[in-house]
Image 1 (spheres, rainbow, N blue to C red):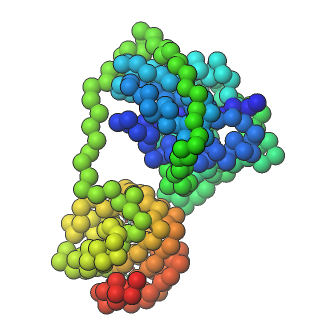
Image 2 (cartoon, rainbow, N blue to C red):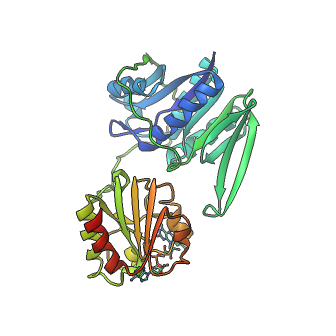
Image 3 (cartoon, rainbow, N blue to C red):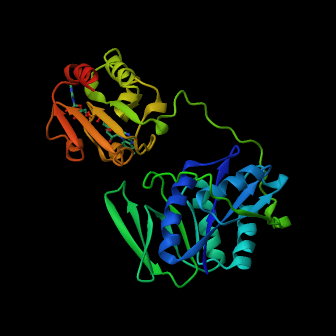
Length: 321
Ligand SMILES: Cc1cc2nc3c(=O)[nH]c(=O)nc-3n(C[C@H](O)[C@H](O)[C@H](O)COP(=O)(O)OP(=O)(O)OC[C@H]3O[C@@H](n4cnc5c(N)ncnc54)[C@H](O)[C@@H]3O)c2cc1C
């Protein structure tokens, strides 16, 4: 039976969100390719994590648990995964297009002399051909890539395009120890410390976001965004214009240089809808726009648009919803 190998990126004892998005892509591909999903997890003290992967439909986990893997030395990871690929002969090797995935997977593809689907929104299969769409120029241009599913293929999946897979407690995986492969020539990098930036809020997990832009008018007036978010039980988001003006902290910025969010409800008030903002929120399930300009670009992607002054509309909306 064909095998898909997913590289399960983790940090501080948890799978990163992008890995869970990849698991969604992989579950679908496994059905279409009639393939088993196998995974590799690398780190130190990762017993529980390896077991947890089974809840996401991964049948067999190769666990590389070694003190040398407490941090990420990309050369160790490359050589070890290369050895696993040679051993289990998967048809597809897939990872998230994080900094880690973008550094790791092209190295692997090069070692097997294969091209790859680099940073695609999704990967699907049709008639023995993979298809992946790679966005360019801030999503102004989309390149469709195709490649035979008969050959060993490598892919990295961009975040924010697929829902995170949900664990199923009834599922479990066979966990197998896999020995790290390290050569002296790989020891030119050494891990010092991993520091995770402190954030005041994680807006990527919010179910409802009320986002304010330059149209709010001033730092004091931004209180209407906070009040509405509070009244509706959501979190505060912002465009870069509002962040640059110092009205709200960077942790709240949404878009190309901020966070990618997919809440159930996204209320955009006083935001015009520049492409750099849209890339961070356009996959929200319901988009409600409040803007004085009915021709603002964000109105085009809105499920509901209220044309009016946000300082009048938002307090009213908070009362109605
Ligand atoms: C490399 C690069 C990266 C960038 N990354 C990001 C990013 O990550 N996120 C991001 O957001 N931007 C980003 N930008 C900036 C982006 O191009 C826009 O400049 C920015 O998104 C505009 O913010 P805005 O919509 O709040 O402001 P504006 O474009 O000025 O829009 C204000 C809107 O408010 C409306 N309005 C005014 N008054 C009211 C009122 N009283 N009630 C209701 N509506 C009102 C107006 O009609 C208008 O549509 C980036 C730019 C570059 C070059």
